[in-house]
Image (cartoon, rainbow, N blue to C red; front, side, top):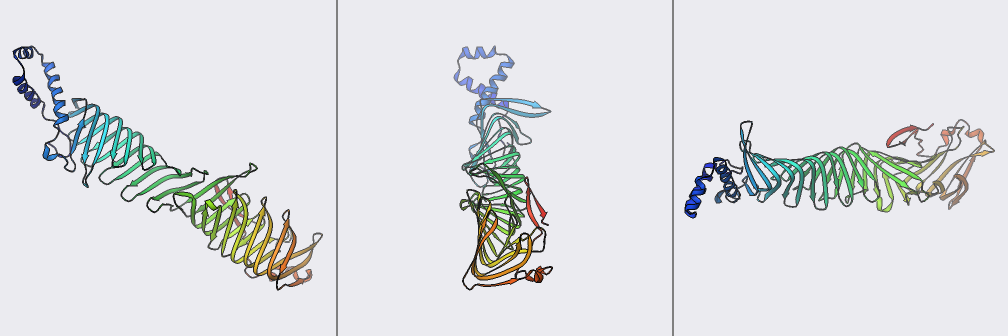
Length: 470
């Protein structure tokens, strides 16, 4: 008997067993009837007896439970065939067998039909294939079980179910000893929080880890937020998912008035927490863009349940003609619409003062700066702690010098995107510079920390671009 593969006693032994049993239990009439039986009927009868013995006595008692042993539990019919010179045993109807594993336990397999190749120690399974190992259930249209390797290949409509998630694909491999699986071709994984699409997925049950690769796409069920990448690593115990390179996140926002906008984020890598892409950290070369807002930084944290984005590492935010920089920038959204931008540490807001005089920039600095928005336009800027402003003046479009002011706090109100009122509170100081002093020397009057970035991110469909600001 070959180790590790189910076996059937020789047909002659079946016939001998049947004849001995018949002599003990049947009368003369039965023996007379047997003498009239033709050769073909004897073969069928031997075969049927063989099926019974095959089901009940596949293995001796001492072999049962040994790692690698395959034990047949049921089959309605057995046929012995010869395929290209190789003896093949065909099992039909409710085929069920188990194999005992190295670390204890067993893998259980069912199908409607199975072809057993003795020399190769493998079985070809077809129709309603089902595999169970502990909490994992795999079903497919067909498959191949390799007894030596303790491995099963599944093909067709492949489906895996475990712990509230369902995977489907067109092909897969399962290694029950190692508790490892590989799925390929149109892989889809659905759970209560999201849906994952990829070309290939590898899963290690003992480590509670999976790696998806090739055209990776994760869609959040609650709001449609989608993360793209070439690879995604999921760490179940840590409740973390990582896109290690070429990461991209897209969120389609619909305002109360029905207007649709799309937030696009790109970075070298992304990491989600608590099994949700709404709680996401983007790292390295982060770029953010939507119609009314763009930004870049080294690290961006998205807290979806709070509609808040935190930027760190040389962050820059642009809104229309306004550029904002600082140590840390917090962007607040209300119902997916821009509500405020709060800057902490070396805060500075810059905007171009005049479209003709390109070297003139209105500037605000302070330790903390908050911009408030209404209907996608700046409503107010509030600068606190060592607040300083530089504004260029015009008299009916004619340049009229610049005004520099400082105080404990500066509040600027806007009307339809234009400065309406400036209020300076505490320790007020101010100085006016006439046009003759400012003309062609604007750079000398820029506030400390001034920097104007000539390129900024811009979304072009689902592609991030860098555009030049003249």
